[in-house]
Image (cartoon, rainbow, N blue to C red):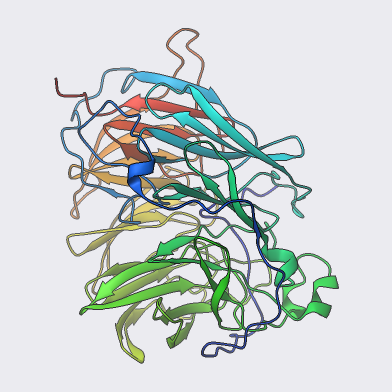
Length: 479
């Protein structure tokens, strides 16, 4: 069976047969109210900090505090011991693909155990369980991949949000895991099941929780899962909810959902949200949902996907996929965009980059990322951002994910190797490569598929493989 990525990530496969139409703020349908069990005021004062490591930052969102897999922490060791950074703690996980998130000494991990989806809150420094929240799920992956969550939790003050593969959206209290509100998005928006279910991690903008939904008219929900070529959107491609209550504040676009998360940015003093949906890139104002543009970009295959988040630098937005078109760079402005460059349409032509599930990283005018659809043909690439020119490529790393820290990349391959790379646009520069082993048994801790990007918080590096989460000390604590 082919290996295909499916996370929060992050995931794989989805596409329509034509570019979908788009609209301004659509008329909101009559929806069932979200279920609210309590009205808790937000505020950091209500959440005690359990962390003891004072240097560094939290990692409360997918891809980190700046949502681009970049860490501001410093002081990593440039030379690793034979076994790599020391293991601090490890945990057996359930079924799933998502990376954890960290806030105020708490680590939140979302997985599935049997017929229950479970959010577990651990102490981020010790791995000790603090609380767990579960709800029943009957999601079944139509292509035989695992049935666990694909999305990472996100934390906002005293609330943590989870979005399950079956479409259940929950808001919980971070201190005790008590339910604040919940909403069945698949039922309320008549979503036809995508190839790998729901895989778009949400984002917070002010009082709004923004995510892809990709709903359809009610009668179309009876279509078999995956028949997305027969589905027409109904103006709920992207939905903004009140983060405190789950109430719908606006919904836009006839796009269907992809697996790429929304990207928020400020350009020339104005806030933007970019969503790489199933049929292309949407640029809009996150405050009210007013759409500035839609840029068609997708492979003309039913089973294909846009899964890599847009990346923003200056006025420019970079998008990439692996099933056909490849990559493109836009210069955006209110009301529209200009194409800076795009990969050639000829399917036999070489593409600058074709990221599958990972989100590339922009550093100093260059873009670094894993390019390739399959385990065997993936290569790590560096391209010139302004032109798409390939500066170098490194094969045989499988499909890998990057974390930028202290002018170095932490690279995790899908086979579970952990690498330390120097950021260098002129050549591939590898400083260390290890297999993470159990200090007692010597057994490998990270097994295929290691599809979640590494995360770093307060000097501790967290990586997950098929069924295990491992915490390593990447930056020793200063005493």
